[in-house]
Image (cartoon, rainbow, N blue to C red; front, side, top):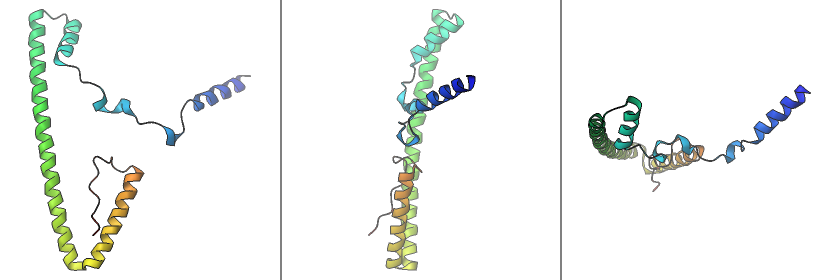
Length: 141
């Protein structure tokens, strides 16, 4: 009887999950989906936890606002740096490809580009890198 009960419970639990290929995206793990708590919300929470006075709460809120502004400034700097690095690597890759084409010739370089494009498509469909972060596919001329 206990064996039948355990079998029924495990079968029911397994039926609740959709098959692996049919699962939806794991949105609950993405940072961008949840709104970040404001400086005021964080100050309110801290004031309740620590019984802060109104003066202390105002100072904490000002500190949190300063930290948020600093964080946003640093994020903008990092985005600019990433874009600059991406442009630099792209220019370097084009230079290297031009040099390689001089060495192996246009026909073999064309074949290489087709191979790269195929590999890029396979990687994209396999889930190697997210499409928004994946490098541009090689241009087949």
